[in-house]
Length: 84
Image 1: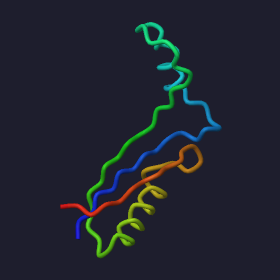
Image 2: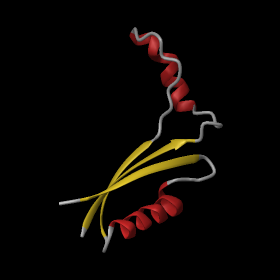
Image 3: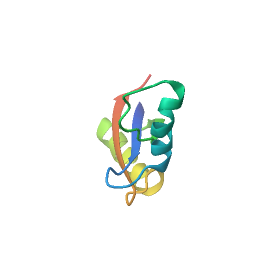
């Protein structure tokens, strides 16, 4: 069965996000006021085959831990739903 995983990877809150800081600081240059913080991460959409939703979640978990996210610097969340 096919599944679709939506994965969000963000820098840990304890770490500086220089890219987000740059964007946040430049908001006033484009007349956007009131922005207190910007954090920039990655959004990944993955289509995969698995025998069950639990098996698909396990594949996504392994992919996040081994290749998609750096657990020292990033946190991740994901959802898995049945695909077409």
